[in-house]
Amino acid sequence: MESLNALFSVGFATALSLSNLLWALLGCSLGTAIGVLPGIGPAATVALLLPLTAGVEPTGALIMLAGVYYGAMFGGSTTSILLNTPGEAGSIISALEGNKMAHAGRGGAALSTAAIGSFVAGTIATVLLTLLAPVVADLALKLGPAENFAIMVLAFVAVSAVVGDMPEKGFVALFIGLALGMIGIEEQSGQARFTFGILELTDGIDIVVVAMGLFAVGETLYTATYENRIKSRLERITGSIWMSAGDWRRSWKPWLRGTLIGFPFGTIPAGGTEMPTFLSYSTEKKLASHPEEFGKGAIEGVAGPEAANNAAATGTLVPLLTLGIPTSATAAIMLSAFQQYNITPGPLLFDTNPELVWGLIASLYIGNVMLLVLNLPLVGIWVQLLRIPRPLLYGGIVVLATLGAYSLRQSWFDLLLLYMVGVLGFAMKRFEIPVVPLIVGLILGPMAEKHFRRAMTISQGDITTFFTRPGSLTILIIAGLLLVLPPLLKQWRALRRG
Image 1 (cartoon, one colour):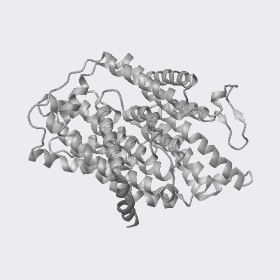
Image 2 (cartoon, helix red, strand yellow):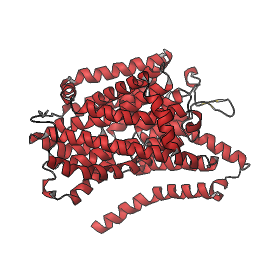
Image 3 (cartoon, one colour):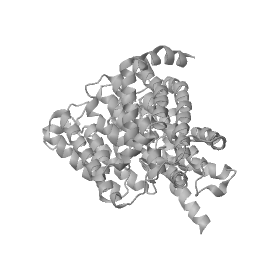
Image 4 (tube, one colour):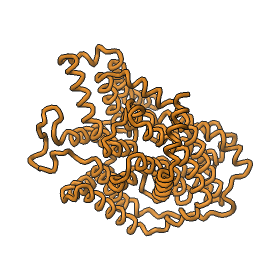
């Protein structure tokens, strides 16, 4: 009940102010537009907007960025269904059935079930966030430095070992991020480390520049180099955009199942949106009364994955707000937005900044309604964005990233760093090295070091403190299992197939 009281008395009072409503509308509109554009996801958009929000008060800026995040999830389905080219990773599955429906003249029904499913899943997931986040925050207050360090080790292992088929590539990215995070003035001694005498590095590597380099410049270079050769056909929307009674009957259960699958995946490190959408699709295929339609345009194959996609996106806010731990690339960049305002997400956030955190949660309810209105009646407008010439689109992104990086400190060094990181991002994408571990290592590395030092100080240098405390030991055991079990399961499956 305390959560609901705080939501209505503090959250909606903050979110329903005229300025915050306008920020939410702007974020939802930008997010939908960017989600529609192929090859550009919410991570790149939030990274590009970070420099522009520097002069905006924190609550309004974070409400806008959350709207961008949500909007990109909604908008990505449009590109998947009409162009068969996912706007972001979570919409890959929607292309399998949605584009077949559009090709058969049922694009309107596909877009409707995606939009309504996203609304239903987003609303239910936000209710779960409202009820669950304060409970997790209260539990987190009881954790000491040893437990907090163990949680971060768990996050490092999860995002590195679970993502992709080759964990070693994830750990390479993680170590690059940890190394970058160590550059600058060391907090305890006040000594500069790994700066190589370069004055601009004494303040450390700016996460905003790294995020724009990896997601805006790097992704754009890769898309322009490789994916621009792909010829895509834009399907026309014929007939009504509304769902028939039969479509409703076939969609409402997949919406609910997708929500229950997606939300838990969002709350765990390396959960992301890809795994729950694939799992939802597989589930719907097994439970469908007409499984023969899958692969030919089954509406359940759009409804379930789209719900799972949006529920997972909401789930990422639970560990972000309560523990300060990002579980996706976009959540990691949003964490840097908090840091831009010298705000540290974590269990104390609900006490120190109740207007911000509850206003942000309340804005998600409002944003869901806005996005439903923006995506269904105005779908024709968003489709026109798909006609923008790719060279103009990619060139505009690089220009915006350049202006954003230079606006931070008006420094040529930031521009050099932006392009160096962009080339690194391009190479990582080319050789299928995941980017999320790098971002998580860069952001959480200094925090993990701080908790490690505190734990060692309290224990007077006794390293066994991490293994004698039940909480930290349990978390480290889970991290060890995540490190060992995936290779063993892969070998077991190979033996069974052999």
